[in-house]
Image: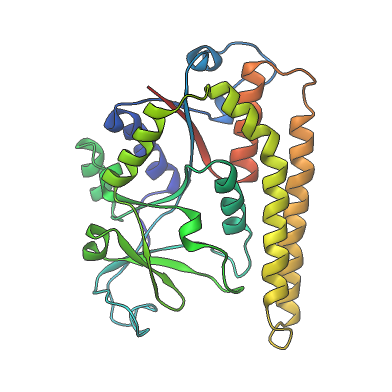
Length: 292
């Protein structure tokens, strides 16, 4: 059963809780809220002189699987019970999303998939009113999954027992992996923020300078993944999908160069806008500046 709410609704509900629940200050770096080419706007003032970290979140929605004919349930080698939740690492047969997030995590280590352990409108409303959306979610680093082994869709599955143990399964062949509940995620992030001595704007500059490196790394991963597939089982349709994925990455590289060339001497607001444009439109994540 699909979630009864949208990814936007889930993301908004989660984001509104994070800073409050973790006793941190947070600035969500939304592209639409930053005015290109205009100084100030409040964001650069809030971050000036602050040290902290950049947090990147890729929101996912969870399907609720309750029938005994659910795809993963019938595969041997796991301990899941019905009902369980699942979310897809990729919704297409070939997708560069995981490669992009692996590359982004390499330059910004606080990069996570985050998905709800609930699926109904009633549940999200209840959790929203009690400030429990973040607590009823799971957090997963892309590096925990690693490079996808083939061109097929892959899913993360967990039931309530697995979630409580910080465990999940990576499918199509079940492999037990670690996920964070909110307490572990929050402790990790809060500790990083409180011990950080790097100015946020310096961190922004460092990340901007390495975005191209990250996109090139993602393209290399997709090249290697495509080459690893046995030519004997690669059909024409599969090759076309591979070429489309690589073409999209080439388009992202071109768009990155256009964004970074938009101002010869960008001020703080412009640099934040550039980060927001790249992280959201090219890597598909929502970016936050977290500080004490």
